Length: 122
Length: 132
Length: 231
Image (cartoon, rainbow over all chains, first blue to last red; front, top):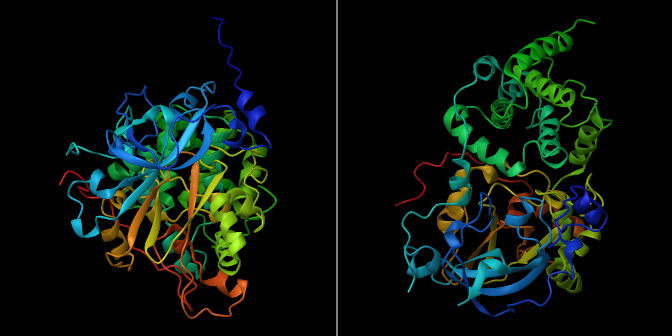
């Protein structure tokens, strides 16, 4: 394996005038999940940085949109933009997130984005 | 079946607990005590703008520290602001509170020095209050 | 000083806070953390920001179903029609960790009400909505909205029946969100300008509903979070 070369200006050059996350479009390959799929948020450990909310971990959700392609925040925090993956917008039932949530309002939901590596089939 | 986690907390709370020296900064305590906040000044002078003129330049400072120099990433600054507010600046209105927290974070991170800042404030004070 | 900020003093009295702000900035520049030019570029950019483009986007969508479709499909593209270029207006020309270039417009229906929060810090669609209000940044709002959305909305004066699904949107990754509320009754025949006026910042965050005659946000008391979890 060749030694990785980290060019700190790389991202700037790549994204200027195109946008972030637009500049990663087409790099993630085939998406593992599709709209309507039932998924579960993996409770994986991260080194110092993550953007996957703690309150969603281990819980089931439904994919509502494949939003964009990007390196996950856990990598970007270290300037690593090599592993581009799909970002999914997923929908949780509030009742699943917070067991004390009122039954009267059992149709209430919460939507947020989780990167592909943070999800597994439910 | 949903597994219940009674200890569930939000991410900002977990992350903000790291490595922050929350001890007070003498200089900033002085500013906090002596400083006149915009809420009072604007009332006194009958000015309607809800924000002090320096709010935009403060925001710009926060942005360039994060986006241009990466010296103080935005998300960390926000976490520290919340923690420091809780500890020292609860009773200070916004955006004065954001300014005190920013200066506090920068001093504790060694980006600026408290004594340097004190000297510079005296200089700026002279300059801004110069009678022309 | 940047060209848009020739601060003719609005208050003829220099406060310690004003002095501190300038001193911090000058020291940071001397230390080489950033340059005066960088700072000017951002200050100028900040001066251009306001919630009006987002309000106009919603008003246009109320009048034009095709445009509404575009808003839902591609918020960044739809923003161009209200004069906001998410990519090239930013001083960086690509977005930043706080302003990524992905906007989603969350359209309410009679049975679905969206409300936006960033539990992580206080991410906010600044390019189209301006600076976030103080309460949006507080731990109180950020921690409680995800868990007790109806209670928090009630504090904002919004009580919704059980027929309405409340959908909290947590802006934790690169997408930034605005809410497109339902067009209120009593606005039949209104122009785009008239409609734009009633789409306040709070309507666009999702904590208020548009109403004829109401063109300003409610004043809010900001409370600290006291034991907001674990019970």
